[in-house]
Length: 131
Image 1 (tube, rainbow, N blue to C red):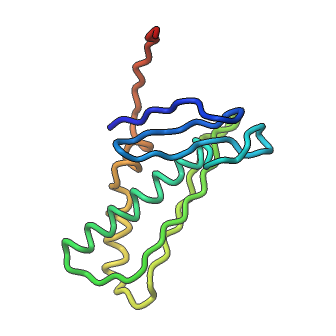
Image 2 (image 1 turned 30 degrees about the vertical axis):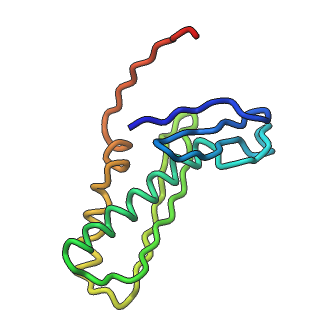
């Protein structure tokens, strides 16, 4: 999987290409950007929310469950001095959904690839290439 960010018009605005998709990332005005798109940290929260929602939907579909509308709301607080990075995730499910299915979907939610990546050990390989 690959994402490429290239500078665009604006102070911190970047165009991000992922496969054939393009999106804009920027910083909010209070951070010196022009708010042309979500910030990179907001995109991280969006990755966790969407991956969790899709993982639960795929599981429910495989099981033949009609779960109705399930929403995933993620709040992300970057690490501050002396405290870790925090993700608060709230999953809203229809009250008619049986408790057994709700519990199983929450187990599956924690197994989404983005959740596992954020939870596990991460390694970085960085290099400079000259153009």
